[in-house]
Image 1 (cartoon, helix red, strand yellow):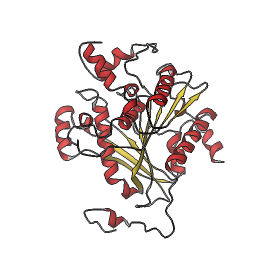
Image 2: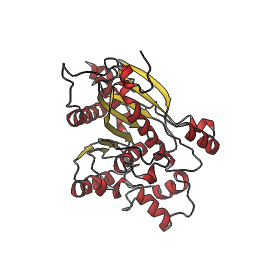
Image 3: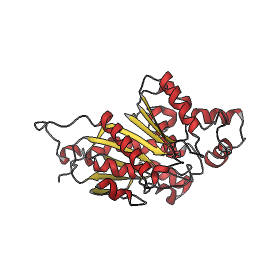
Image 4: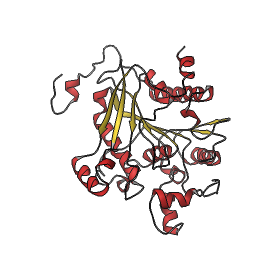
Length: 323
């Protein structure tokens, strides 16, 4: 019944949850530095929303899904929740939707660094909301898929987390959807100037397609970080995607299967356009159910036994709040 009721809605709004919205994930020092660099409005984008299912309490150690929105790295909002978040909340997952700075003067990789800052906060605080900080899976759409994949493939790498180099930023799984997995477009699959646009408008780098800039794109392409990855992936892509070509997703999945020790699952959707899963349709809902089943099978096997002690919320708060 829930499937058919959701199918009739063009957009998706989760139910049976408590929303904790606009939680800042910056430190006081980061706040001051970034206000000076980009202004207060930009810093306000460094926030996240937590969707806690009604039946989940602090200390429940439920799996955590971190969603990173798309929008070509320069647009979008954490409020763009799609059917996957609705489905996971119904399965009692704790869901976190992350915003990041879209128009930083420094350009990319500000977006990636902000997402790592958000992950830092999540791993430190999510137990208060019923999540397990050691069972965090990241996912995203389009540009958000690239950011999610980079999060999964660059754990604890100092160059990607300046100022918090010693913080653990590992995750347990990754689900990129319609993702930009090769910023270099090394096989020229793209029908538009993807390389030039990223260098000039997203990274805000001079020099066009210079050797230095192409190396920068390579360093930030999940396609060229597969050997270092030890995280299971589920790659989801529509075969009619004309913004992030499906051929790149196929190449990524094949290369991952041959070069990484981690598991790779690849789901190619016939008739699926770019980010088709954002809107309600039988195709998007069956895709979402498939993703949720993969997530549940791989990351939701542990259930607390009746005799296992559940931590009270005052035991989780280090500074001693009593509730």
